[in-house]
Amino acid sequence: MTYETLLTHLEDGVMTLTLNRPEKLNAFDTVMSRELIGFFRDVNAMDEVRAIVVTGAGRAFCAGADISAGSGAFQVWNDGARPQKREARESITLAILECLKPVVAAINGAAVGVGITMCLPMDVRLMSSSARVGFVFNRRGMAMEAGSCWFLPRLVGMQQAQEWVMTADLFGAEEALAGRLVRSVHAPHELLPAAQALARKFAAPTSSAVAAAVNRRLMWSMWGAQDPADALTLDLQCVGHLAAGADAQEGIRSFLEKRAPAFPLKPSTDMPPFGPWSK
Image (cartoon, rainbow, N blue to C red; front, side):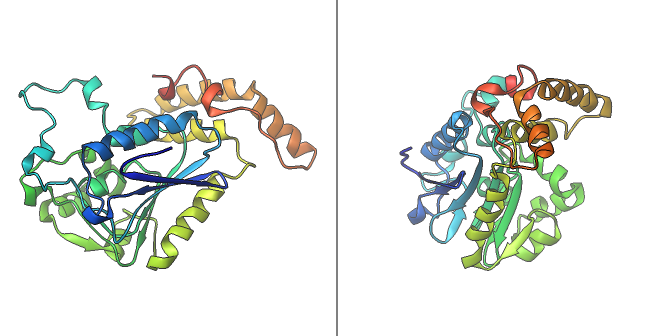
């Protein structure tokens, strides 16, 4: 895969995706937006990719929207009309949310505005001890974007989310860890290896890729459910479908035969014909 603003490297089933505008601190522009959305949609058909690590080139993760040309960088809707849901779906956060592969953020440096909001739908976030993040919308006179008003309070709680957004302060790794925004903090040179090591566990061939995709999307899609019966209804349907499939049969057979499983099903072709992944 060749991109203008991204680098990709596949090893041991783990795709390392690097935001690659280091001279601009990996600032987010329309080209990067289009390429990221395209990557996270295209990767669903790549069965050789079992997990994804996202990081930044140089000393930043992503310094937010590229505002070098002025406020036009924020102007998504120019005619005053309310965006339709189908238009809102053209978002990097929804592309990540709907991905069939687990996604790990390796926040290696500054992550501000969209640089941190794009990390919210990633499954696990690791952070360099030298990195700083900030939800700086109030300092730019802008509304929270990328669905962060939905993701952030659910991840860290309303009180913490309000404090970070209302102060618009930049803060370091220890505060991000204490606020449960990130899973762990690492020395700069240890961050990417740690993220890749975790992703390799996700990508292990002893795990069914289809089951992993189903379970990832089940948890995200049921996060806001008001009634556990909604989750039970969907997971029972999934259990029935997967139990009749080749991966479950192989999982049981390999357990009884005391050997490593060789799961035959692929997310690109064998996802259940129902559920949030089928929309």
